[in-house]
Image 1 (cartoon, rainbow, N blue to C red):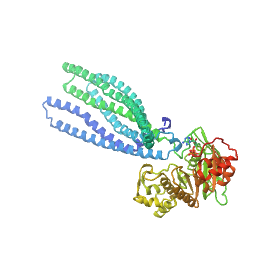
Image 2: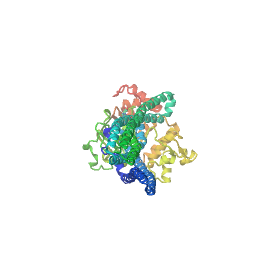
Image 3: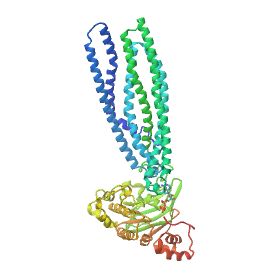
Image 4: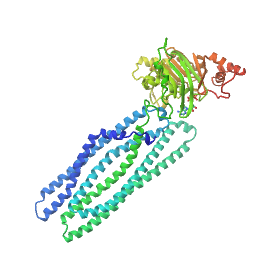
Length: 614
Ligand SMILES: Nc1ncnc2c1ncn2[C@@H]1O[C@H](COP(=O)(O)OP(=O)(O)OP(=O)(O)O)[C@@H](O)[C@H]1O
């Protein structure tokens, strides 16, 4: 994610504007508090003069007490208002960014590190809140105190002020230099933190693999190296942060010493009154803490700006409906191929049609000139060697990616012109690595159709061959599952996902068949389910099992990104050498004998030496 993707006047600015009322209210109250602070030394000067003239001082004492209390009350109230604005900003930012991430272009999002996206959404938004509210308010209000104090000091004695400003000016310029360095260091530190988060997420997502590979120590070392990088850049931030106060303090101490020396000398000569000298010194003392706070807040703000930049970048990630970024996988489809403009076909359109589709991930071509149709009913099997592009075909049907050329049609309509909801509402997608989630069995099943009735759920469970499995669970449909659906077997998880897809009542079900999840009994159950489901809608299965292939009404053989042949199992065994080899190598015993006898006839193949299927 680069700064170039951040929208100008982006999310951060918009969110800050949306809280203008609370922020302005807080700043106004704070300003009144600043005035009350600035009046106090002047009142003390009047008090001293009154004491000197032996006049009554009760009024001054009461006024001072009122100002002290008002000061505290105003400060607390403005803190609450600004804090509330901050919470609103961070909440809105997280909701908006979560929406952006959920609707992001998958092709782009897959190039980003998930942990970094997580860090931006959780950590950077929190830092941004502090910068936009607390730091900004501190800079503004304490800046006002400093400015007001300087004006009051100028009214008391211009020469003493010039001495003060001279000493503080040098220190301030040095501090601003440090602030710039701090922002750069903070940006690096946030990026390093994102990298650490990304690595942690990678390890957590694959923890069983990490353990099975005995890679705990290697991963620990890798995480430790990342943590070291974060510590190093964090140390740079700490050093620059720590430099602020000393740089400024040197200036403050120098100005205090100079003011005391010169001021006392002028009091001795009678050119400056004791009351004025006291008030001037009080203002100088009053300036110390606000000035330090201004610069500390400047430091925090600079760190927050780094976070804001990262939040704005996340806000700029390409969205699904936006035109695909130039040069990325999935450019806009060829408008010449818009099939929705074509006259209606008697008897209805195919459920799915690929017309001369070309697609690649980045510069890497995967599919070329792919054309085939899927009838509205029945089972269509997609077969081919591993990496032939079978899953990519499904991803194009779901429009996770857009073809570079050609068109994908659902029921005769080019999906380039359909909304994601229109496409995915009519297509049920069962992924190979069964996308079950933490939650109950029921929650998993109704995920794509939250309003489904009990009868619909029971029907989907039955069609997916899950009735006996659910009945055996301790709490039936309400049995909780762990992350990724742990608590069910691999085959049961896949049938759970089939039930989820069925509940959508889709026109097309895409089934990326698992290779090794099912025992022969479950396989027979799923085969039976598929047969029943295929009577209601189009089922397209990436087939790894001979049972599915033999059952299929039509088989599409993909080879090296092209459709090599289409037919039934019997036709293809007879006519297509690659299919014969695939059947022999991959689809186990049932086809082995038949295919082996065909291979012995020496039928040619377009890809000698091609590997086994999926
Ligand atoms: N997100 C991606 N980015 C880049 N390349 C990808 C991506 N997904 C797949 N590929 C590549 O595209 C090609 C086709 O992959 P695909 O997953 O469609 O093959 P497949 O036929 O489904 O394979 P398998 O049977 O092993 O699942 C492969 O060479 C793969 O490496």
